[in-house]
Amino acid sequence: MTIPGNLLTTAMAVMPHTDVDQALKAALSLDVPFWPQLPLLSYYEDMYVQASEHFPGIQLNLTDRTLSFSFDKFIQEIEQAMVHFETPDYFDISTAYSAVYHRFLEFDLAGRPAIRGQIEGPVSLGMNILDQNKRPIIFDDTVRPFLLEFMARRINVQLQNLKKLNSNAFMFIDEPGLQFVFSGMSGYSDLAARRDLETFLALCDRPVGIHLCGNPDWDFLLKLDIDVLSIDTYTNGEIFTSYADAIRDFLKRGGTIVWGNIPTNSEPFEKESSASIEFELKRLWDKLAKNGIERDFLLSRSMLSPATCCLVNADRERTVEKAFALTKELSTKLRAEYSLN
Image (cartoon, rainbow, N blue to C red; front, side, top):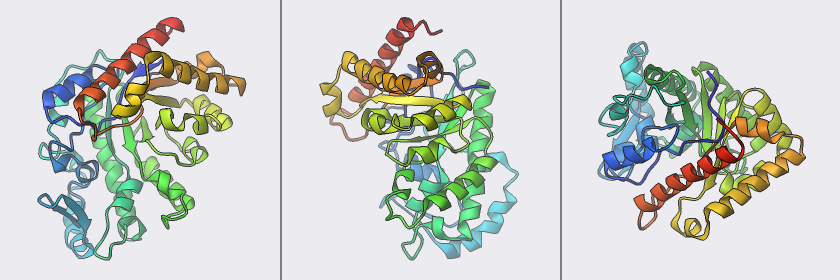
């Protein structure tokens, strides 16, 4: 399948809601719905914790809300984990780790243009989880290959479940850690990241893409073998669109770009309007058109979304839901203007 474009809408999955029904209603309000992740409801729903379920060596402390890793525990548990490698349920997300995922799987979503799932990617997970020596597990030559295969299996099982509901299902691999790979301070080079991501993506069923809100090396990302790239263009659009050649090649390979141009933080959201966001989007598209990317082609391979997730607003759910509504409003207007089906 091809991931839909034509400025259809989706959003980031991490949401500030503690009411499951309200969160699902918001997620289902968009063209391409997803199952929400609700870390304010439970620490189990933290994106790193959720992704680490069943990973050998993990030490989860719900009281202190900490997640760490023990190599000794990893050695003790890895053999048992390998026994379960052909058991799909082992790699799926349990009801304990998500209040929403299994409810989402009960909806009739066959009529949607697509649906989407998500899970944390191996680079971010491996950089975020520290071992007993306070060292990221991505550096461990024993743990890292297992991590790459383990997370690919988690993605494949979830994608298979979603495709039972809608044949156009696809996955976001959340990789916020990629922006730090290029900082020169992570100790994990872009060469290592490319090697590991190429290994990982080769194990993943399709279609899959990467979502991140930061500002990595866009040339690096656009040249990866992915089907969709979801980004915060509200903050990073000017830099992103300076990579016109790489963007053109990505689109020609069949890639889709999700333009995150609607802020979800209260202060910037209140400063913007539908008109100002529309103006900025068109300015970015005009910039690409001047560099040889024909607008109709670009929009056919584009979706719209809020810029980021947000858990810190005083009104939390209200601003996020308003951002969802504005995303949908802008999509409706632009689709009519450009005669997109």
